[in-house]
Length: 274
Image: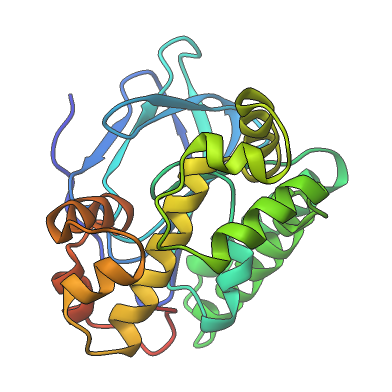
């Protein structure tokens, strides 16, 4: 039976190991105020984003950003789902470690195998153990093991691998002019490729469509402007290429789970990146 789950609050890290049957499901319409990492060990899970369903199979690590609605359950085709999980407050220097390919706004996933998978699972098992310990520094020890798992994940992250020069050229051109109303045809012309070819390259290397990448970069800049300036929301919208502030606000809320004004007012813990 599915129900609205209580939003948990964690000081540093809360990790665990679940082995659930086909009835397992979790739904949080507002997400949580921390990050959630789930590494599938056996069976399979399903993550919904309101429009699509994304599968999580053994060796896949799924990351949900703060404020992103949670809608996940055991995949009925698998019948069981065994996984490690960790709710955590991200340290300020982890930003690059948490920049993973996106399945949808706020929902990210990596696939790890071989020695990398072994190291990820070993470190997550230690994070679970320290999370349940009563020692005075257990929270920091658990966070330390989670950081080690993230560092191993980073070795399998396609976003940290050298980019195809054509993708790099498009990325550089877009970031030089985020205000421009880019079309897929515009982006393809930058490197003299077909629309289908540039779309394939972006999805294989960045996990996003070309226009999805444009929006992601716009929203990242918008978040920085909201954090670091006092510009009105309409001015921020114009700065990142949105003539309609209402449409910008709707897209921003889809990405961050908060309206631009609510995002600017949110409390930011000292050990969490903005």
